[in-house]
Length: 139
Image 1 (cartoon, rainbow, N blue to C red):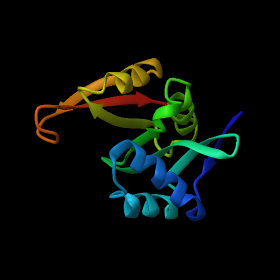
Image 2: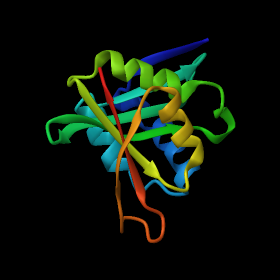
Image 3: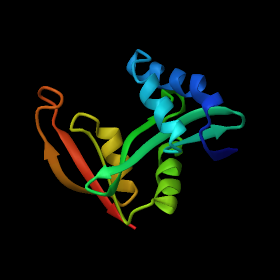
């Protein structure tokens, strides 16, 4: 059974552990902590364990921007990213929602497309040789 929660500061170690499992370090700990403190981090649990999280802000031309969607590698392809997106779409503080992923991240591109996001452009030079694809959805 899955359920979505607003992440709390006492969840930070578990959330950072998932992020570290994906990127190999805890370099985003302060970023995640700030998002939790500002109530911009939503987590998804399977029973009592976090399996993923989403972080957003509204500083992208006054639109919502989902900056991170992270699901534990062992829990991928089970619908958790879709659940996080659906929940965020339902609570988005703005009508326009943007996000992005690298051109090499085919799985995340599929997730965006399956959830009604459309390509809205590219940003070169963030990751050398791997352009960032911007995605958009209107609520």
